Length: 280
Image (cartoon, rainbow, N blue to C red):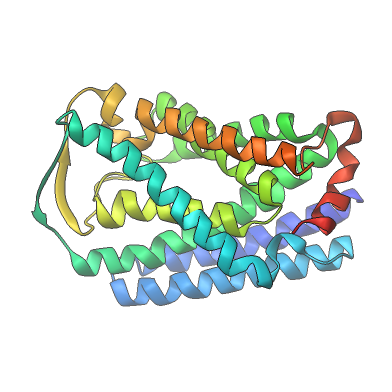
């Protein structure tokens, strides 16, 4: 694909991402508007991505096929929920997570929209564009490492960011979500995983998300104890448990990808277009 077409894809999608991000942040204190804007962001971002890729690559956008959306998103929600429950469950049994009661039902509702917008935009940007385009030239594994590091580095811009937290996200989220895309060759599954993790973390268990400050979700709860276990001010994403369970899920996805023949070797990286077209 010609360089100008890559630039066009990135400019169009990033432009819409910037507008949607501004709207989402602007209404985040209103739960019902946040829910509405979040749903609209998902619809707009998927439409724009499909349009940009179809126009520049002259192909069916198989990574966002509608017939796979329900099933792949469902399994993504299952994996993301179970992964976070494993993390917070271990922290809880060590006595470092304590629930004091109910905090905010409306806050949880608003976070559904906010996290849906975040999951859809970040997956389209980092897996749909960055990982997919890198994979063409470098193969799956190098693209997985590079895109994961970029994804982790992006979180250094957050208020309570730490280098340890960014590195943890590069592994447990950046690499894991790219592995999920590789296994399925669609973006619905990583979107589901991403949303479920973020919503469970903030909307249900009311912990910090990537150093972005306190959240007011369903439960009134506190984290305390070793930063290695709890993630400290960065939140559970910097916990050693998140890294361990994220790596385990990434390995599972890569095993599936190998069995399906979805791994793109470096010398044959051009196979990715064929793999995407044949993805089920």
